[in-house]
Each structure stands twice: as structure tokens, then as C-alpha cells.
Image (cartoon, rainbow, N blue to C red):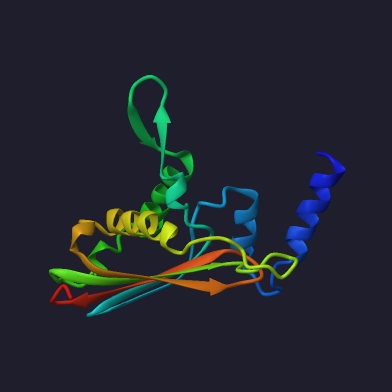
Length: 172
């Protein structure tokens, strides 16, 4: 490993907040797209989950398979969805019974560069992959999501994301 790479990794570790669980630090050594569940709450009308790790962007959703004119999920997306299924296994019974749902997804990443410029990333690029992963893991079809909201959250350290799934009877 070259000196520049070692210094880059050292700077990355130094920028973490001081109170990060060991499980989240272990994530840095594995794959960033393996979600680590930090909190999960279920009520009769809603579900809430908070995760360490990144959500893959829709820009990394699929790749072209050479000469077959087909598209396949990328390794990051497959890893992310597999991780969600493992984490949320057995929580399908927690999903409140409803025809339609409202889904709010918070994505926490740095919003500013080291020089103070606005970091260019769209919160909407992260919604589709998170929505698909959650609905597959929780065992219902994403066509039942009547409303989806994305919220960009500023963080200076570890990437994280959260969701809240609530019951709504009318798709408005």
C-alpha cells in the first residue's frame, strides 16, 4: 500500500465522530454497502429502522452484460439487498397491515467538501435502491408505496441512513 493511500485512510479514520460503535468501524474494513442495524422500532401503524453504512446510488443499480443485451444488478446492490434481508429476517410480521404506505428515507452523508463547497449528490438517487431493498426484505410489493420522501442529512463522519414506513389508507 502506497504512502498516499495510507495517509488517505488515516485521514478518513480521523474524521469519524468519537462515539461510533465498534460494529460500524468494522464496516469500514468490509464493504460499505453491508448495512448494520443500529435501531429498529415497530408500532401498530409504523416501522422505523436506522442503519450504519451506505445506500447504493441508482447510478450503480445495474450493469450491462456484454453482448447479451441484458442488465444485471451490480455487486453493491446485491450486497446491500442481501444484507437487508439478513438483518430484517423475521421482522416481516412487524409490517402493519395496510393497502398503502408512506415511506420516508433519510440519507446521511457529507454535504460539503473539505474546501467548504457543496458536495454534489442527489438524495433522489438513493431512494429507489433503498425502497426496493426494504420492500423485498419486509416481504411486500413496492407498488404499495403511495408516497415516498427523501431527506438529505449533513454528517461529518460515517455514512448512515434511516427509514420510516407508516400506514396511509389513501394514495394522495
